[in-house]
Amino acid sequence: MYPVSNLDELRLGKVKSLYGSNTAIDKHTVDTCDLSALGLAGDEQAESFHGGEDRAVLQYDFEHYADLAEQFPESTAYFVKGGFGENFVATGMNEHNMCIGDIVKVGSVVLQVTQPRQPCFKLNSRFSEPTLSRYVQDNFKTGWFYRVLQTGTMNAGDTIEVTERLHPEWTVAKVQHYLYVDTENKTVMQQLVDLDVLAKETKGVFERRLQNNVVENWTGRLIGKRQ
Image (cartoon, rainbow, N blue to C red):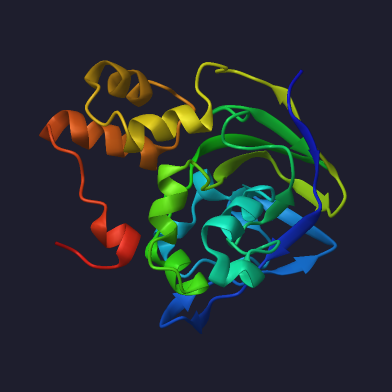
């Protein structure tokens, strides 16, 4: 049986200056929202590469926050719904039971899982925890993105239902394993480059590794500095 959950909260946000940079991570709840190919009506991104058709909607498993509160006790009060800037707040769907290419129905909208989120230093700033982005990357607690296959309207309380699974062999967490752990497996990297439903951004990571025979430096993304 495929995962089914409830859309506990639907969130969107405007770009504002927070934590020393521009960000739209601080999102508020709405009861209903229209969805276009580029995302939720009224939802903004501080950087152009934070948006696009392959990153139209971000979902995050609410159950991750309990682990984060345990790992980072000084920030416990901030690990709440919407803390990671997610559009969908839901429980029971996670990186281990959602797969790249999954077709998902929410209200009148149809979505497709495209890629894991690659966490950045803005999470560290938001929670005043300098190692948070690295922790969620290492433990596959990042959330994932959807592209829009059918536009429409969604409401808080709608069912989130996986209706079709195209690639059961490629959970979000398995892709993360090859992004961050087994980073030099050329056979698997080629398989991921050839995976038609995988987002161009993530495909590009594997393409560059194959072409250059080197793993990219994550320092700038994770802590905001480059070596």
